[in-house]
Length: 488
Ligand code: AHR
Image 1 (cartoon, protein in one colour):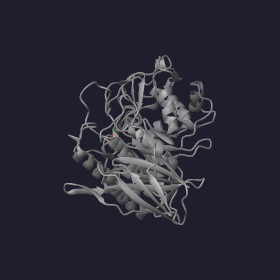
Image 2 (cartoon, helix red, strand yellow; image 1 turned 60 degrees about the horizontal axis):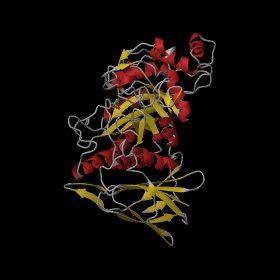
Image 3 (cartoon, helix red, strand yellow; image 1 turned 120 degrees about the vertical axis):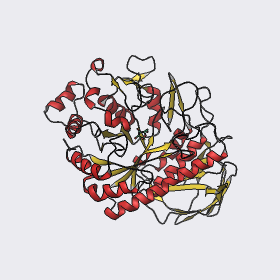
Image 4 (cartoon, rainbow, N blue to C red; image 1 turned 120 degrees about the horizontal axis):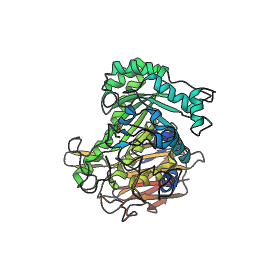
């Protein structure tokens, strides 16, 4: 491996470390919000344990309220006295939403986390007027009825809302639109996203998924001028089959391997969508925002812990490292990514069960990788053997490096091979390395996980398996592991 310190790349936007919180399963209710009267310690209804854990990750941006739910959400349901708010069926994910968690609670959560707000507006069942008024309610400091209503509801100062999206998956649950139709709808709605009182909103369009390149082509050719960002959704399914996705916890090497093959497809999708964007926006003004990504498994038998609840293993940690390394590589165009989802849903960083909380292997990778936030990407030349299984093969290593504002170099190495450690000989062009420290996340089993009974089975340990040999470092990365090193 040659780390090209003499060829610094783009800045890794912190928002690549973004999160997503939808009204789905037990994410909002139980996972984040327990209410002021709860015996679970909370700050104005938001659970203290979860907020404290998330603060450690330095969450830069949080997307809400969906997902599919966004296109059925009417913001006025979630303001004013909580006991007067309507209870509405959650048509996308089941159950009834009490609307106890609404605009004020979300913005308070963002403030507690120190995260920017990314609000996803309702196109599917909403109107431009409803969207326009929500933005005024949130961000206006004027003496207008809506700003005064916000004051009456307890918030005097307007909030800062830097990101606002026009619908979600408008090719599917957001309205089953054709791209040509949505491009016009987007232009119409985006016109009514106004900046109030110094707030500057970046307008985001609902983008494509997987290899649907036609969607990106049409949106970029018809509406690029009106947008600051275009989204992309891609989920990793071990089997690739939505009817039988694969288990979160019971899998052998075949599904370990196929999951990694499918994870690596993220690079191909980003490359091809970005190439289309380059045609219409060579200056890269419009960001590609991978605002839904992560693993999606079959529901496990046993106690029902909510819609799309899934456990998380060492495999998810490896998937996380690979995806973050890919986002770094395309940092010039990929300027936001939001893992789906934050708590208790899909590839969550935190799981809860009543008063208990557990940090997943995915959480630990986000914590280890936070050093890359806002740092300058440093390219790497790598020659590594493939990790083969049957006819399929993947590179055995996924790597990434960045240099932070203080000049420290951070190097992430993921070993995809579940049985063979990797001895990585590393040199540095344009710099000399004298000190090394780091952490490793690994376990003896591919499906090692943290449970409410055993919450610390998978956790980072200090990493010492390296040798400094003149201008070279030899790093021995264990099988199925994520290593993050700090070098100076
Ligand atoms: O993250 C779960 C769902 O996946 C979201 O609501 C939707 O946008 C996507 O299909």
